[in-house]
Length: 367
Image 1 (cartoon, rainbow, N blue to C red):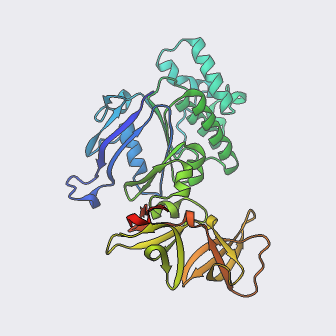
Image 2 (image 1 turned 90 degrees about the horizontal axis):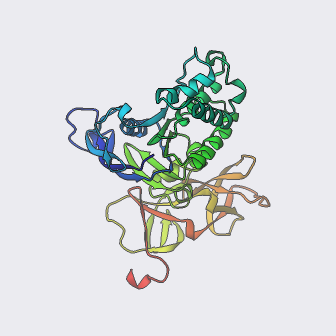
Image 3 (image 1 turned 180 degrees about the vertical axis):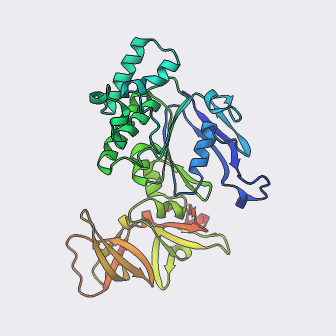
């Protein structure tokens, strides 16, 4: 088990990178503590699998270092890093039984037979494989084979880290929640460093204590699920996390007031020195925007209302800009005119996509 330090890490697939645009993975400085549950979250092509392959030793970075604790492993081969990796598609030995598959990594390390048996039984029980331990893997479903693959990654107690590369892609949806819960329980019980790569926000937010959000080869925010939801550090995080994602509206900001078109919006914080020439936007999640009767709050136009079972979501326009808001159960509208109330504490201002902290209440004198 180990903490993992990424020190000035960057990677380009072309041999002569001349600028940030040539890097598939832009510079990262980060420490993952021993025993943490982490997720690398982002869309396809954002660099998350490249980063995972660098950690595992399948790719040597263009520059920077990787440390496991204080040991520099940057140029060590995969087998010298003492990691386990679970891939998107099952990696199992079809001619072996489930028991033999799970025991294989331990037999290679010449563990005592009794210790192997105990560990295999424990992992099989946690993954609901106990009833098929003596069946050949070739006779099992794709779901079961991926459970075996997960078990082969989890069975070793001495690994520096376990890396999961979209491991639930082939799992039926109704089993995904169960397996995520099993992985979370195993993490708590085994105190292993786990890094989970996914493009699925639900998988990331339910598995990880800390989520690393990637976009265009860069880390745009690292934080708890709550931090990513409540205070997105970048408009991409606001868009990518949440369903629907955060409303991002072009704005003009002066002091404690933002203007979206001709609509004035009161802010909880003050902004006296926004960068000149940069794109200024206002962000607020639909969960903190509530539709109201006409004449209440901000004037908006309703284009449609969607009933998604757990809630009703209004698609609206604020000065012609599309947005989404929550619809109270008791609200009934006649026509497309409505009002909108916003929680000022949950309104964020961004300059060229990056969160601007602003000045808290009581510091107006500093503005």
